[in-house]
Image 1 (cartoon, rainbow, N blue to C red):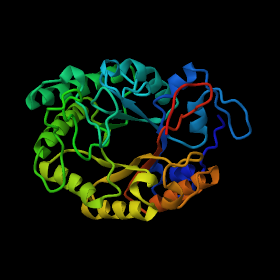
Image 2: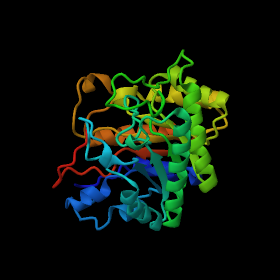
Image 3: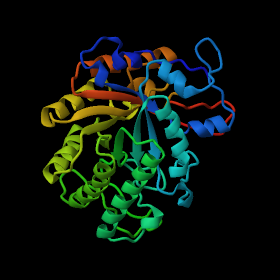
Length: 345
């Protein structure tokens, strides 16, 4: 796979001479890189030369941070939608985190608090915590967070940023996917149900973060950039409950969330209502090859290398206008279909 680094990303790391350049982070999620490497995938630069090690190469191209996801016990997930790409347990991530930290890059740790993908449509409680009361879950999430971070610290890979939860716009640890009769513990705009529960879970997770990694920035990650009332209600609830965090983390995929103007409206609203918080785009992406249904009519850029590059440049240009912005991370940056059976949309 040839790596055509989107040079616009480098602008966010300081090439435009922004007065805040030294505080901005730019990189991507590379959680599946060991699997691609084990499968024999090759990465090449623009000239076709094989890249010996992708992480130093990305650093040399101007990136200064990488994001890694963590599941509780992915081997225990037996759902029909079980995905081999959701394989990152603690033993898996420690060697990868060491490579990232040894390269001098900042590290974002993304706790999914699930045995499989956690996203707005799927926030399943880990199998080991099935049947626990909310009080027991509060203790479990604190213990798991603190023990994980202590283990990483002992390995010399203390995270610089920590996400307690992944795309938690509608809550987390809803229950068990194999129990259709269970009440899902979702949080919604216009309802008070389950917000206190979510706040307590986050407070206990963050307590573990603050105790073990007091210097790490805490990111609360949502993905409602296309639905600003829901987005702002989430962070308003966090404020009213006194949840302690530093950075608003957003997902932005134009296919799902709307054009760049919509994202900027979401950022402006957050800046107005939560001026004490930084903002990071912790996930973004734009296809260079595959059209999805209705994509041509829906989006402002073609599904080509040129379209992908222009999307990224426009995104960086927009973010540079906002002092609140603290970083931009490409989703599944290590994706490589050549010589592997691993897939991505």
